[in-house]
Image 1 (cartoon, rainbow, N blue to C red):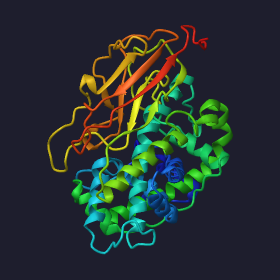
Image 2 (cartoon, rainbow, N blue to C red):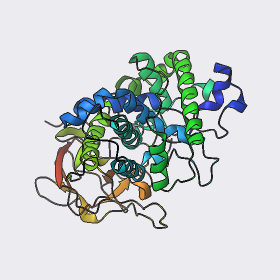
Image 3 (tube, rainbow, N blue to C red):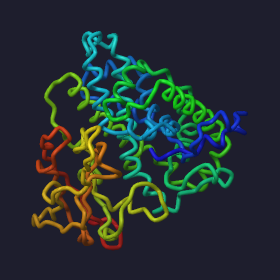
Length: 423
């Protein structure tokens, strides 16, 4: 999600002149991994009709999952780029409303219907945002924890230090055979432009969408070249993250699980059927044992910045729909801090509430003004060793539609004070 810097360095690799590239440099990529999460989520969707539709239009799920980051290269337009807006619930809701308003869609559940490609693209766009949230908050902090934030020296001028997207895309391409084919064309530019206008970006034009699309194609071509050139070097310096980024908290499998729950909620929303926001993934996972008892009192942030870390001492719930956001055109602000009773940590045996750090529970990982899906609670003290704890998400948590989130609780057990397993 963070801005990309890769394209500035691709001129030599592809024979592209600097004048042909967008003017704004940014950080590393990650679109290959985004597409992987979005596509793996399809098989986990708890709706036969949606699963069938998405499976029939996997190319558009992938196109949608890659779409948002192209917008980071169009921010010479008034009021900014379309990339950031495309990551969040405000835009996804506007996209849904645009499809609902069309009179030519026929039956939305028809996998061969006129609007089926748009629906698949919509879901892919949503998958990108959710994937970034869980990846940036839960996976990337392992980098500084493990000293695995390596950047090949040749690429230091092009890749930022705040994320692991490029490095793990290299692993996805080489070790897991993920494709680097060009992004398929969007099914409807009119739908996208209408959705952007409704979400507060009326200045976005078809030309800007084309500019972002071209940037994505170049970016992926460069990644394919750099993946081969730098794979061994990155893997040697990042052995842990390279080995299990597919199964680590916030990684590919975790992301796909969260996205599948998000898909289902959006599908019900699109069909105008009742749906309640619920918890679709947690960290720690339910019944996890060996969670650290110490090291909880620290600062927490997203990404792999050197000042970050603390990946194993986070308590996070992922929701199927976002928390409240600021409507397009409004000058308001959504506070990240949540009511104290919205998320609670208890010692399971006694029921005693564990005190929380100032500012928690809160919406994470970034700015809630456009609609985020993660809530986090951090204790203000270290936990007792070899104890079971219960996390509770309550109906004091209100979603962006103004409705209570379905209550949910889960448990985890701490390790011994020395980090060893309890017996």
